[in-house]
Image 1: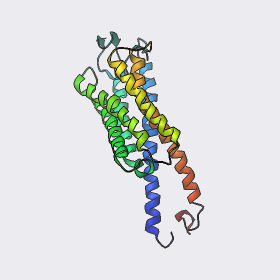
Image 2: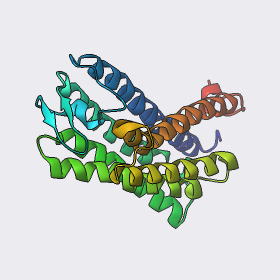
Image 3: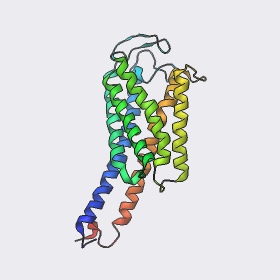
Image 4: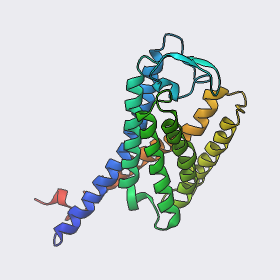
Length: 241
């Protein structure tokens, strides 16, 4: 590739973009769970993963919330949680955009999966900008983008990921999406199967995040190894000069 430096640097630039995409997923999901823990710990009345919605952490006012199940909500660090929602959403979209051909097949399944996963990212942004007790309609729209559109995208992602992804990984991706969609139906019908309202909501919302974290981490490791291997090839830019 010495005779064609543009091709070398374009390829390296593509690898950098992909690594940024994977890192965006890892950072986005990691910061969400860290801030989730920080914000819930600030509650005077203990926050419960069983009794409380995720959105309760971002509610701007202290009040008794009657729906979908009665509970008292008072989140002193709601602003921090809403910033985390927005950051998560933006980083999910960045990851979808930058992983590109490294992760996704060409064709309808790959395109639709990416669009729907990006839609879930938009949903997190909407939810963060509109707490449930400030603008319920916008918040509900955000939640539907996350747990309906995003989870359908997760099912399609199992079909739209490239063949280089292990078959077990592709099947597990679609299974996660199907599980989350089923949980959403149970959540909306108030059938919590002993998990509580908050528990069932998490079964509907968290598979997408855990998938992004796992795929992002695996992608970073694989690209780091490939980059190290490539640097040993004669003519690679890192060996010139």
